[in-house]
Image (cartoon, rainbow, N blue to C red; front, side):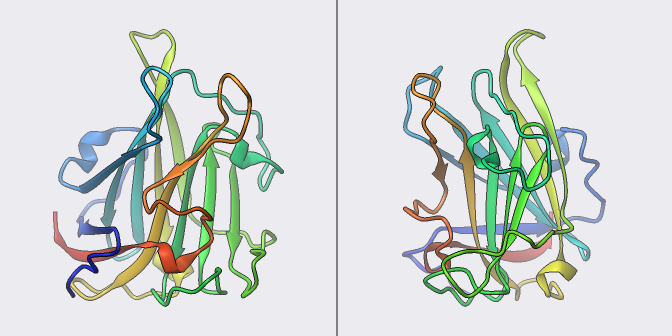
Length: 217
């Protein structure tokens, strides 16, 4: 499959070992990576590097987010407004069939820096089904400058292929995906987010990038 020149595109390499979820990015050293930012000026701007890997059981995603003193308040699962906290979001179109809004095969996860999650499945309407509960595993680790103020965080995720209804196949499986970073502006408290695919509305599979599974890392 050739990349669509109008879409973002990333490869996920296969690994023989399970990811340990301890914030050790050395485990991801041979992974494909993409970097995107919010266009802000450091130290207030935010920047994300995303790594992708896979094995027979999971699609693995790691976010390395640069952000000075990230903040969060929501601790409960599906807590209202969790997406206003500093954290990450990813949306997957397993069938890679696009659409104006998320269909029932599509899933989305928001994970804040407290490792709380708000997960959704598409409903075939403009309003996703927030009552759905996913089975992804995830862990968040804070980064610090010499043990002082936090300079960002690392979020590692494993999404079960079973949940996505996919039997992963090397050099064949292609899914739609977008990677996002959420939070609020320090000065105004307004919701402030940015994503890899450059979408105005995140739940818009037609605009997702593509991820293809390839061989060993």
